[in-house]
Length: 519
Ligand SMILES: Nc1ncnc2c1ncn2[C@@H]1O[C@H](COP(=O)(O)OP(=O)(O)OP(=O)(O)O)[C@@H](O)[C@H]1O
Image 1 (cartoon, rainbow, N blue to C red):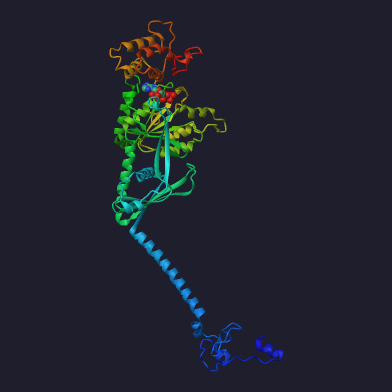
Image 2 (cartoon, protein in one colour; image 1 turned 180 degrees about the horizontal axis):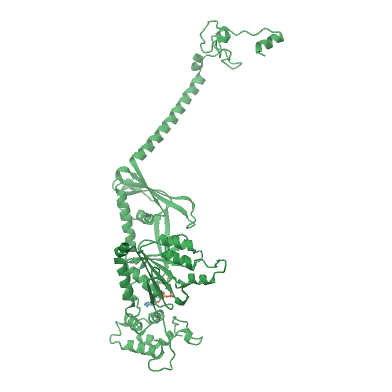
């Protein structure tokens, strides 16, 4: 039912609309257009109760614009829109300029250059001048501390631990001046949550500089690398596995001279020559399709210089040492394989006490469950399986060769096996010369020392007295005795009995390799 019919039905006449309201789009129109001529003609222009225009007509658009409230609102709206547009235009222009004029370089914490650049940023710089001094400042600093135990020689000042503090740019934004007129914005930030690898959040470092100054980036990385190398010069970096990544263990150590490790006659020379030959013959391996890696197994009793030799060899070759403890909690076959594929560059891989991993092969129960972490097959695969990396020198050490699986000792995994045994007469004499050579010029002290060792059967029995038990001592024990009697020939000779290992003596004697202070 239409409204008309409704009103008619209710007995009231249908309302007529004034002709001036007939066409709201043409308010000035006075033509008496029928209300049905415009679809909008029946819509009221003003809300019920609104003030009629002074002309007596309801509010029209011309009146709307002359209305100060409406005009003011419209003006404000236009201003707001213009401001928003202007802001957006400004942002777009800034982004465009940024893209065109600036260059960003992001360095991930996983990249080897990350610590180098951090150290480079913390370098003291020349005074840049009044203005630049106000602009350039590392606002937040963080500290990276490493500690190491002091040797007996170093610990004269009373302390036992040496700490190194390195100041680095902290998290946040900084500005540094690279050279006159070249400024770099630095942003160091934590990215995301803790990684499963280290338990620490990932970090990035972003350097931003003018596009026209981009050439300094190459200088920055070269300088940062040179700085890192300088810090490690004459030093051997020891890496250790920290969860899924390699981490530097303490401070890089001063290179140990090869001459300070005394192995039996010719052993050291033979090993060094073999490694050097391997390093010089990469082409030979490539041409024959042989994986370019070489494995060495050093075995023998504790304290005979196996680890010391590997450390000194790394120094001699200008290599680092990447060490994995196979019996460490959490070390699994997968983790071992992963770490071996990520080996730090120019590093000797050192797997100590390798028997610890192989023991579990026998301890596996019928279900294949093993209480230990790295299995024997995991180790074998990591050494020469499909995923095993190339360009690698591996040293394995063990005190228990009898516990090793024969599968481990086969060319490709272990190419050379060397027993580093108990101290021989040759080694004892060489060590004596290193400690007392300058004061025992006629070697008389050395002869008395060796004779005393002989009398006690410490070179595997006495040549003159068959009743003397066959004994051995370690080079570590001899070193301990000499260190205890620094510059004291008589003291050293008088204490030879302390070299007798505990296994050959009653319980009250000193443990193997340790020198007890005289009462
Ligand atoms: N042949 C050696 N020449 C010089 N120093 C030695 C020698 N053997 C042992 N030492 C000294 O004894 C200490 C222990 O030596 P090192 O750790 O190299 O022995 P190791 O054979 O690796 O022992 P382990 O089998 O227990 O790991 C070191 O301080 C090292 O300087």
